[in-house]
Image (cartoon, rainbow, N blue to C red; front, top):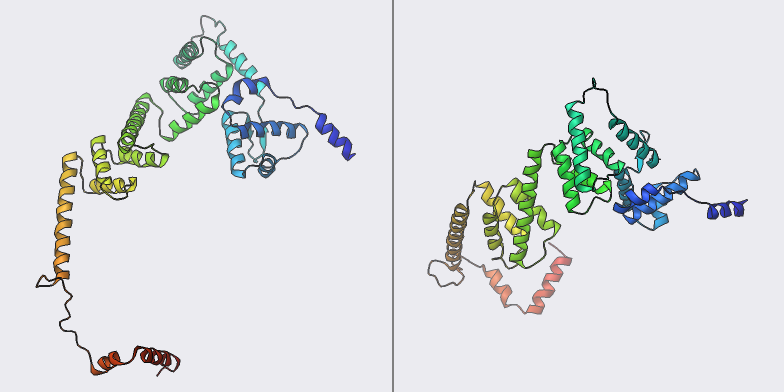
Length: 345
């Protein structure tokens, strides 16, 4: 029985939807694709699979498997029930539903039935996206994705169009996964209207340009950690590049220049209400003068009133017992100390 079961398993076939291969697989990671294929086989054979099982099967960390399942969920190829069970999405059913909905909406309506302004805007948006980004032939999954962006994400039609445009510029229209990831980012930033999107994209462009300028000045490639600093300076502190550049110059005066030192300068200026380059320069001049005077005062105190720089022992007195101890043979003195430790008074 055991051998027969093994034989059936090895010789069995697992059906993979062509839709997954042509429309969904492009934007998924290798681990996500492996997970999906293994889940198809496990569901066909009615076997339960855990994240640890998948991690052991693919020789990866459990966190990587969790990330791959999140990818599949975001792509819409799997779903999670209310009880936490994993459900494989019927991609063919989704395609058929999209086809029926599209053709039913395009059917000729009676003259008495008027199209609502909302549906008319949605229809115009779909036609514009299809013509601009898909050469007049858009897959049904994109119609469904457009409905999700409008209904679930609550994005304005102009924002949805801009989302397609950004993904097209990045060559990311092969799958809905990358578009949905970007939509999630926009939603987390509170972007729903075109005005909010314009403000956000202007800030992103400023961050990109600032990163590029700083990288050229420092002659190095900027990292994600550097971007975190720059993002705070622009989004939170609202500083223009000229003030940020001055902070970078001050940072380079240190023996070990780091972005943390530039961040300290900028936050110190922000705390004192500085908003212009001239105020920042004046603040640094005042601080330099203050530090110089403090150093000179400390140096004078160390040198003493005569300025000789010698240590001042005035007022120091030694008793007779201490002086006698200094005249004792060093070895004898050490033995005495050891004896005092052994037999304390």
